[in-house]
Amino acid sequence: APGSGVTWPVVSLAVATGLASLWLRRRDDGTERRVCVLVLGDLGRSPRMQYHALSLSKHGYHVTFVGFSVGPKIFTYVTKVILQTLQLLLVLLKMETQSHILMQNPPGLPGMAVAWLVCVLRGSRFVVDWHNYGFTIMALSLGAAHPLVRLAKWYEHFFGPLAAHSLCVTAAMKDDLQKNWGIGATTLYDRPASVFRETPVKRRHELFVRLADAHLQFQSSGCEEDERVEGTAFSVRDLSGDAVTLRAERPALLLSSTSWTEDEDFSVLLDALEDYEGFINAGAALPPLVCVITGRGPQKDHYMKLIDSLRLEHVKICTPWLEAEDYPVLLGSADLGVCLHKSSSGLDLPMKVVDMFGCCLPVCAIHFNCLHELVKHEENGLIFRDSQELAEQLKSLLSGFPSSDGRLGDFRRNLRTSRGQSWDDNWDQNVLPLVAPP
Image 1 (cartoon, rainbow, N blue to C red):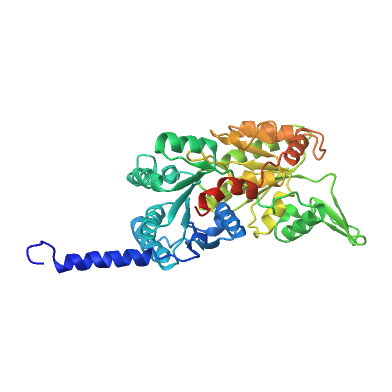
Image 2 (image 1 turned 30 degrees about the vertical axis):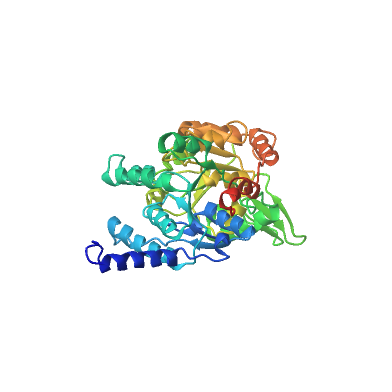
């Protein structure tokens, strides 16, 4: 109208915005039973988010599981963020309206901002599952004072409190989020999947035979005179009766898994293994060791050069890549686990130890602030601070091997009798009330 100060373009924009909002927020009878589980990375490396998706599905929710493959390194970081922003925005807006978007952090840049924006536009509820702080991981390689690290810290501090609900992995992180971020989070401890359990002797042997085909460390040290016997370094199978037994004089099987990143210093383990070799050379009654280190990652080549430079007679190191179904079988076959994960924030716990405990595998783990929430020193494992302490722990635990009468056997028995709450019960108690329809 003349003199009103309102032009047709402004009215048209307002109408278009209103119609777009109605379209974006359109809901149907199934909306409250739809949840998007979002990982800005490889879904295969996010077991906790896989468990979220399974739990939601078990309770009748329709789950859309969104992940991103790692892009080529030809892109600059800024270009990568811009491309991921556009991709993620398109993916989330194209799908049906969700009641919730449950997102893993880290990585959270740019996913946290995009997911929050889509939730605002579509009337969905935004839930962040804090596994760690992204800026502390970036600081490992760039330094805390780097501009990108400072930007990432501001970003997480700004968008994190905008979530409708927050989950986290430790009580220490819950306290830190409340105190320093103003975020009230619910602690949801990780639990092992049902596939992580002690491995029967026959399945151990089958895996050892397959590994022996590709890795000398698993092969029997002597020639089997009896053709009716199938042997590995650890086990023997009587082909006539199909009975499988573990060798009385077998080496101890030490296992560690890693993604070969900056938060794990594997020189600590290598130095401890050199000390262990020295104990045997000095006359200590200790078993030989086969140390298996699984995983892939950016620093593997660096550590492989260090491993190749070692001259060890009683310690053999093997770095296989395992199929997904073989990893829990190997964990359940090992005698002792070693964890070198040092939390970048000091507030998260290593999932690998959770899986080891699911297999009733005692663990030696390197110390950091909240590790005591998982590893109970002298109850289910031992905590060390340097390579010398780890070497002494290996010596102490493996003295008398393979007898189960010592501390190693005590730790395993403690793990068998203290499995704790299952993932399903834990999830139903802490997460289901957050996503259930009002």
